[in-house]
Length: 426
View 1 (cartoon, rainbow, N blue to C red):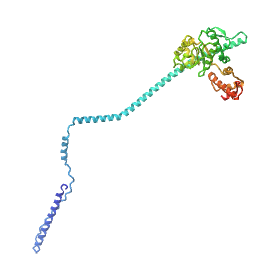
View 2 (view 1 turned 60 degrees about the vertical axis):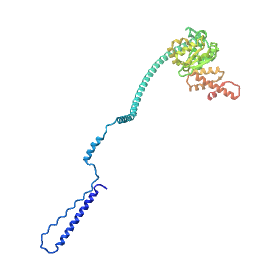
View 3 (view 1 turned 30 degrees about the vertical axis):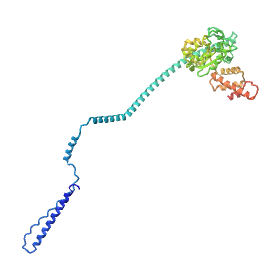
């Protein structure tokens, strides 16, 4: 049962009994006085006691404030001092919380550091690029200056050569004697002479006005001074191939018995820089052609020159390359200049010289061609670099191949006669 429920019901029952007894007493007094009696002053009827208000149900008992106040001190009294294990547990929990917070903050710190490192790296790279560009610009300007100086010097030399050629032409027309040139070995004035008959592969260059003198003078001087180095430098234009000119000199050296072997090795400067000289052991008595020679390492070329001496492997070194790079190379390496006496300038060839070269090459190979063929070859030159000997001779080889194919298909005797149609088929 709920608290106070029975006491409340008991009070209600007691009140009902009290009210019922008072009503019975009042009824008995009224019946005893039924006879007439002198009026008497009526006794006041006692007032019924007012019923007490029913008490409201009280809410569930709650601890009184005093009790609460008392409970608190008790609770405080119940708090026990933390043990050592609890302290360790609390410290461990705090450490874990700190580690967790550190782990959460670590990516942010790392990201911030990465951004700072990236920014620093970008700034360093920009500074490096600016410095590289500055150095490159400085080197370019220096190279441009040196090229301009060499071009001016070359132009002056060409002008003097033209003047000498004009003077020789005037002397020849006046019947004043044969053409004379300066011998590159002795420095004396000597007759130019003619190209040696056994230098068959060089005849096609003897009809080119700007090149013929160099070719004829070199071969005649080599014959006059067999004890001097026969190494040759062939000067071309930037990006032009002159390797085939070197091959023609090597073949003529062999046909003139200036070298003992017909072996020819061709190698680019960058490749030569990487190999050992034992690779050249099989070249004994032949010719070595170094292409793009301006890029060869000076110390490597010194090794090659020593290796080519008569008491070693006894071969001739032929350098081919762009005139400016070779001029710079010899300017920076004076110790090997004396090993290269003969210079042949191919860089001065123009369209007229290229057609003269074509005539000589076609004749050298045993073919014939008429005027329309050479007119068509002039048109073909427009599609290639003027002065690129290698490319032009390769093109002529293809034309001759087309002639052989056509004549073989016709079933007739091979006449080796080049036609315009053969050129159009290439």
